[in-house]
Length: 270
Image 1 (cartoon, one colour):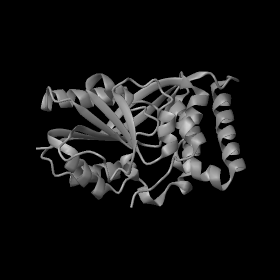
Image 2: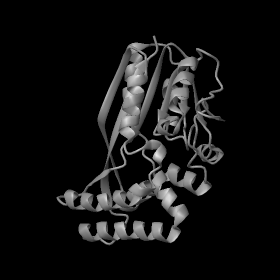
Image 3: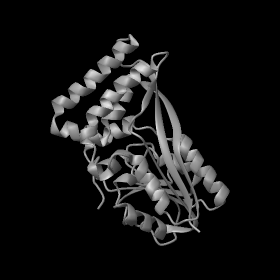
């Protein structure tokens, strides 16, 4: 069965504020679609849309874009965005999409499909996709890296401390490697026309506090926070202090480059 997380209002707000929108991969998806299935861009469905970071960027390309999520808190946060008129949201499970068979041109899930009942979701995506429609699933590894002058390696040793402290709180449903989950979905997808990329780097310049905030949106950090709020806060503050000290600065507003390693699968329904 699927796993339900990210349903608290505070967590949804942090998700909206800190999560990266992978515009570069969305451009890759659209280039794939335009090459494989030109002039059929009527309806895109962003499954597990969260607060809409990946939903809104699809709006310029499609007549209609619908973001779906099981979490009402996430959808309420999505509605606080400046949504284009062709974007709307629906509350539903990923495995029960409210669309007719063969109605959808693109089904995508951005950093969400690992939480679904994956065999049921892939069957449901196949049901709603029209012939020639595309499936695009993407996510990223937890071990983001930082770039800052000539001390990047030093900072990343500290970042690994952060991730190691959170590893015991990783949900057993997703196992030790999200990448394997997506490569397994790629292998199980029966569409003959498909592509897999396991190392697509996305870089963003953010305040150091933004990097900390991004890690705090991870499900593993949220589990720690629920179990021991004081320890979660202590861990974040300790890591931030170590990073500031290594950078020889005092302000968490100091900008760093966050390097996020994405993987994605693209597939075209015959």
